[in-house]
Amino acid sequence: MKQSQFFIKTLREFPKDEESANARLLLRGGFIDKNSAGVYTYLPLGLRVLENIHGIIREELNRMGASELFMPALISKKYWEVTSRWNTDILYKVNDSSGQEYGLGFTHEEVLTPILKKVISSWRDLPVALYQIQTKFRDEPRARFGLVRGKEFIMKDLYSFHADDKDLDSYYLKVARVYKKIFKRLGLPVKVVEASGGDFTSEYTHEFQVLTPAGEDTIFYCSGCDFAQNKEIAKVHEGESCPLCKKGTIRKESGIEVGNIFKLGTRFSKPIDLSYKDKSGAKNFVVMGSYGLGSSRVMGALVELSHDSAGVLWTPAVSPFQVHLIELAGARAQASQIYGTLLKRDVNVLYDDRKGTSPGEKFADSDLFGIPLRIVVSAKTAAAKKVELKARGEKNVRLITIQKAIDYV
Ligand code: ATP
Ligand code: MG
Image (cartoon, rainbow, N blue to C red):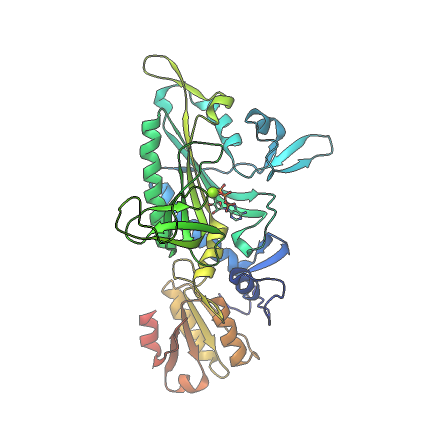
């Protein structure tokens, strides 16, 4: 992609009204634009990051046999009434000109369960797993951490439908394993944390938490084993010995919840009357699970975890481009030749071919973009058939031959 053609607009200064690193750096770097508090546009550069995150999620969920669909966000009041969620405080309500009332989806059990009611009748029809990647709306009173807490945000939501608890339990563990793999590929270290099931279940749910001082949640966890609980349910205190392994010490840290998995049981299948006939012909309610993963929040969490004062440091897995090729004055021929070679080798490269932009400005933009590798060609390096190669986040600049640089990439 040629930078002169690609729509990118970095800001000269940090936005004044933003405190979180993700909002400051993503806005300044031209990844997102703020429409109102908690409502953002994903500009072309940011959309590439988001789509890379979605690509990894899709690959892993498809691999585990879940099918993707896309549900509406505009959901008629009658669906919310069946499950007694019309008066949920985070539900945005909308009226149309004919007086019809709708709620904007903050989660989608109310849409999906009635669809399955049309297709499930026997034990042979189960289990089923469906997911979508879609915009969610929530009337959040405290939308202030950039992409971490929006009023409109993007979530992957997966729902599973089972004949009994045993089948749900084993699927739930499978999703937990797949989530760990997804977060690993995304470059996000997560802790699996026990949390309250809210009004859904008396059992614990599991949250996937990224430990960072920027987080809004408080987590108590063991220094030695996997024990970890959200403050909401924790009965332990910092410094105590671990109630599980008895060896480690309890620590306290802030976290960003990037995923949450729930056993819903029959909370939705009962009111919607989603049932099936078992082998003996008896009617049973379908047992459900729901599994959320906030992809736009993941993008924000990645920035909180990996940035410096000059910009973001993306991992190759989510970076909008793999290489930033920067042409300085007098190196057009060599730079465009390198660009052509990289394209031929299927390298995802952003080529800063802008004329009349100072080297300082080009480097500052490059740091804001956070692309893992930077190649600079100037008249001087070109004369020696060389380029400067630098990894984002490292000071070390290597002067190497063009051929070596291409092979390295
Ligand atoms: P929180 O406790 O942070 O408000 P939640 O527990 O209400 O989140 P869930 O209903 O479990 O969230 O949603 C699943 C996932 O969607 C969360 O793990 C998170 O990654 C993401 N998410 C939830 N609310 C928001 C939001 N307001 N902005 C961005 N992402 C969100
Ligand atoms: Mg949650």
